[in-house]
Image (cartoon, rainbow, N blue to C red; front, side, top):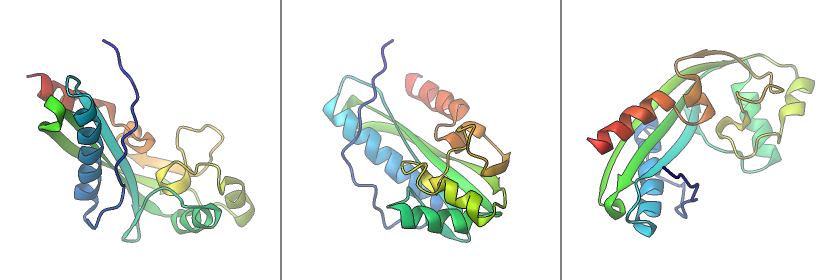
Length: 164
């Protein structure tokens, strides 16, 4: 079986405020977009956000936003939501779900935080737990893969649902 990474060309903006529905909507939008362009393929789409203090946090827009996000998360519990979706038959059929993990960020001093600013501009929450040089995350409750951006066991189950 051959796999390819094909970026979607959809907007990641939504009016949705519920974190689970937010990530499912975007994952479905991405999977369906690519499935329309590749109607003979089963397409997996995903989207991840961080929620802290009632705020939905995506990828940082710039260095100032990266600092703001890291300062908000610093020393606090947060939830990481990843929506996963599989679409096939040109996007006419699809399945989707969301996975949630709780994450505690280590309390870092201003100099330590400054070293992380801008390091992960393509990651929700402006950090990457999988980066061994990133000391930001202290504890994870739930699926580690979810915090990385793809909860593997949930993805396997979703794909099995497509096949059966």
